[in-house]
Amino acid sequence: DVKVTQSSRYLVKRTGEKVFLECVQDMDHENMFWYRQDPGLGLRLIYFSYDVKMKEKGDIPEGYSVSREKKERFSLILESASTNQTSMYLCASGTGGVTEAFFGQGTRLTVV
Amino acid sequence: RKEVEQDPGPFNVPEGATVAFNCTYSNSASQSFFWYRQDCRKEPKLLMSVYSSGNEDGRFTAQLNRASQYISLLIRDSKLSDSATYLCVVLNTDKLIFGTGTRLQVFP
Image (cartoon, rainbow over all chains, first blue to last red; front, side):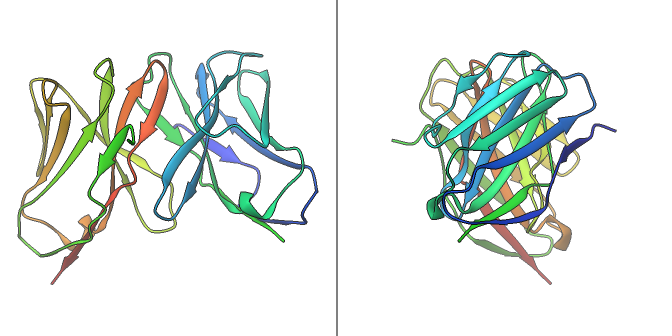
C-alpha cells in the first residue's frame, strides 16, 4: 500500500513564526505536490517537485518555499506565518506522468 | 476563468437514483483526466481515470469530450456510501489541477 505521511494532523502557530510541514512517501515516486484546501476554493497547488532538488511554483507560491533534499521527502516552509495561511495543507506524490496521485492525511494549520 | 470548473452542488438524491456530474476545463492541451472522491475531513482518493473512449467501473461511468473540453461522471443505483465530494482533476504538464468539487448527498 502506498503511504504518504504528513508530520502533523493539527498545528497551531503564531503570526510571524517559521513553520515546517513535512511529507514523506514510501513508493519511490518522482513527483511530489503541496496543496492547500479552503472552503469554496478547492485544492490549490502551492509548489511541486518532479525530482530531487527540483521545484516548480504552482498557482499560489507567495509566502511559501519548499525543499526536496531526498526523493522521499518534500517539505513546505512558511517563512513568516500569517493568519491568511490558516488552512488544510495536503501533500501528494505520484509517478512521472502522474497516472495517479496519492495524498497524505492533511495538516490543519491554524495561525493565530 | 478557472482552469477546472464544477457545479458545487449539493446534489441531494435518494438511494437508487442515477446522478451525473459535469466538469469543464480550459486548457485544450491537458493530458489526462481523473475523478477523485473526498469524504468529509479526509484526503482525496482516486475514484477513476477518464479515457477518451469512456470507461466504466461498476456503477460508475466516466466520459471525456475533448472537443467540448468537458468530463462527466455518472453514478447509477446510488448508495448511501456514495455521499462525498467528487473532484474533477486535470493533468497539465505534470501539474494536477483540481476543480472545487461537487458535493453529493444520498438519502434513504
